[in-house]
Length: 451
Length: 177
Image (tube, one colour):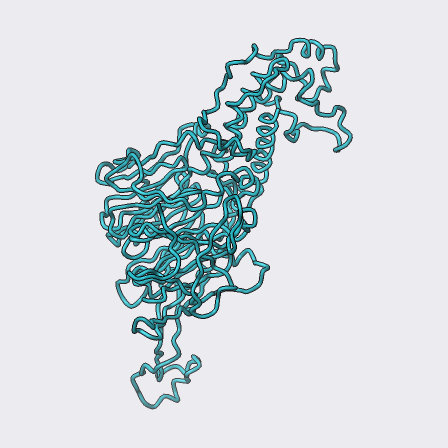
C-alpha cells in the first residue's frame, strides 16, 4: 500500500543531501558529549543542542546562496555555554544529573534570543545576546580598565562606541528550581508567550516566565499509596495556538487533553485518546512498547503525533478512540523484544517531529537510521546518518532492512543492525526542508536538494 | 518447562536491572522502575499459573501460555493464527500441585539454618520468602561457604517455591517517595 520513496521523480519529491556533520570523529564517545536534545528556533536561523555534560551549543545559519535550486546554507557555532552543573541533593542522598533533557526556544521579542533548558530538576531561562560594539574614550578609566589619576585629567569627552569582533554572550536570566520531586521530562512554552509548563513523572507545573519562586501545579497523578501506581507522565506539550489547552502522554499509551479553563487542577481530562490494544500482539513487553515517548502537536494545531517504541501515530484532536494514521517505524523488532529488553534498548525514548507544513513526519531508529513518512503521498523512506555518506551535497540513498527470508543486495539484515547507534533526537526546520539528526555524539544536517 | 524457564529468566533479568538502577547516577527512575515491575508481574503471573497447572508431571504442553511467550522465544509459533491471551487455567490442568510430602519432610530439618527457598508454607512471611534465583539478602557466610545450596525447583520444595513467587510483592519495587 505504501510505496518506497526512492529516486527523485516529478512532483516535488524530496531528495535528501548531506550538508554538515558536527562533533568528534572518534569512535570512542565521551559520555558528556552524548547529545540529549536538538531544537530549531522559530525562524530556523538558530539550532540548539544539549548534551549529557550539561552544555548547550547553538549553531547559526549562514546562507551562502539564497537562490533555489542552489540554495546552500551552513550552520556554524554561534554560542556554547554550560547550562547545568551536576548537583547533589543532600536530603535524599541523590546526585542530580546535569544532562539537558529539553531545550525550548521562546519566540523572539527583541534583539536577544531566549531559550529554556532543563535537566532533571531545574529549568533555566537563558538570554543569548550579541555584542559587536564597545565603548571607548572614558574620562576616568584607561583602556585597560585602570583608573586614571584625577590630576592628569584636563579635558572632557564623550565615550564613543567602536566596532569590535562579534561576541555572543549567554547569561542565565531566571532559574526555576525546587518544584519537581520527580524527573522532568518535558517543558513547553505557551502560545501566550508568558507562561510555560514543566512535566515530571507524576506532576505538571505551570510557570510564569517572570516568576521563579512559585509555580502552579495543574496535573497531579500521584496516587495516595505509591504501591498503587500504574502509570506515569511521559511527555507534555501546549497547543500551538490555544493557550488554554495542553496534552500529556502516559506510560500506558494514552494521551489526555486538558483545558485549563475547566478548573485549576486539570486532573480530569477533557479528552482521552486511546487505541485499544491488538490482542494478537500481546506479550510480556506489551506495556513497555506501548509507553509513549514523545507527543508533538502539528503546526496547524489540528493533529498531534505520538511515538511509542515501534510506531508513530497521528491523532485527530476531534477523534479520541483511535489514531487517524499509524506508521510502523521498525516492525521487524517485534520478534526481538526479549533481546531488546535484556540489552535495555526497549527503554529507549525516541522523539518525533513534523515538517513545516505538517505533510511529513520524521523519527529515529537504530543503526543510525531515521525514517520519514510522507502523509500526503503515502510514502516512507529510511535514511542513514553516517560518515560514509558525508561528502558535500551527497544524495542519501534509501536504506532497507530485511526482516526475514532472502536478503537482497544493499539490504541489511535485522541481526546486523547496530543497536548502540541510535537516533533518538531529530528536528525539522520550521519552514525549509533542512533537518538536524543527532546520532550518539554527532549532529548531522541534511537538506533537500531543491529548496 | 520452557515457559517456566523463560518466565524465570525474565524475572531474574528484571530484578538485576532493578538492583542496578539503584546505583545509577541521578537516582531511581520512576518510569523505568514501573515498566520493570510490570514485566516482572507478567512473568510472575505466567510462572505462577504454569506452575499451578503442572501438578504431578502432565504429559501435554500448554499452548495458551506458550503463545504469550512467543515474543521471547522467537519461535515460529508467532505465525499461528488464532492467538489467544494467556489463560490462567488451561482446561487440561490437574488439581493444583500442593505437595504436602515435601513440606512434611522439611519439618525434621534444622529449622534455624534453613535457606529461604526451603521454608514450609506455615513459616512463610512476605519478607522472608524469596525465589531461589534472587540474590539472598540475609546475613550469611562468604560466597562459597553457604551451608545450603539453593534447592532446584523440581524437588520437594516445589510448593514452597510457588508460594515464594506469589508472595513476592512486586509493588514493593516502586519506591515510595
